[in-house]
Picture (cartoon, rainbow, N blue to C red):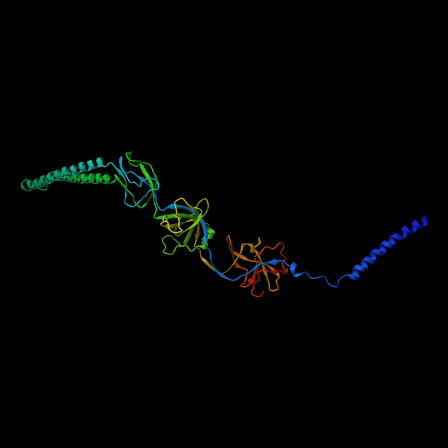
Length: 391
């Protein structure tokens, strides 16, 4: 019995070794002559776009707040009680250029005109009398005097004083009429009332504000532009140039609907903004409060997005943003349906597209779909074959 156990222990390693050798031999002899090729269905499926050169306008985006072209305080130039107000002199009221907005009690200034007219009459009487006395003195000197007469003997100083007093009286009358005219505060332009600070019967001192008004014929919007964006705009060299300024489209949501207004850049400000380093362009929109079919009024204080007409660039390519990776590369599919990674030069990134300056050629196929693990040289299956000339 012990001999059998000893024999089994001695033969067991040999049996195991022979089994391993047999299994290895079977694996070698029975292996296939060639590994199966990857099935076409296992290749990555991609969508492509066939690029072609285009001419693209590079508009510049900005934003700003609508402001009136002119906004001023209506100031009383003379003192007095308000005796009349224009019905439209309320917040939001409309008025036309030349409308009488405020009337200050003019009676004190009418009295001043009458007094000035009386002073003129008195000054004229004195002047006439002095002229007569001067002529009489001249005649007497010619008849009785000897040598050259002095100015005092000929009453020349008295005559000059009378003439000066008449001029002063006439100036007082002109001033009295001017103050009388200042009792009427008329609108210098057509517009609206922003706020009112005085009412009928209120006494005003000279320099008191009656209301704040603004012109509504033209609206202005200050649009900040970065220095790097100026190359994309065809701007005149100075504000006095007759060169055409670019158009601008304004957008804002009003009443739940996206509204558009057309305007034009009219000038640039004199210096860069000290805090941001940007240059402000000023856009104008005519008749901002006109309301028509599909157009809401462009109200003062509204925040708007602006798209400024830019320059055009020829022979550039446009791609969806998804076609570009973080290394500024695109995946190009060559004639063998294999991937190539291509470094490109981007002219501009936009929300819905990337504009490529260089790195692509007309007719090349660029992958625009996501790929989990793209590898250069791998074969792909194109799903949108209609985008390819030779599918």
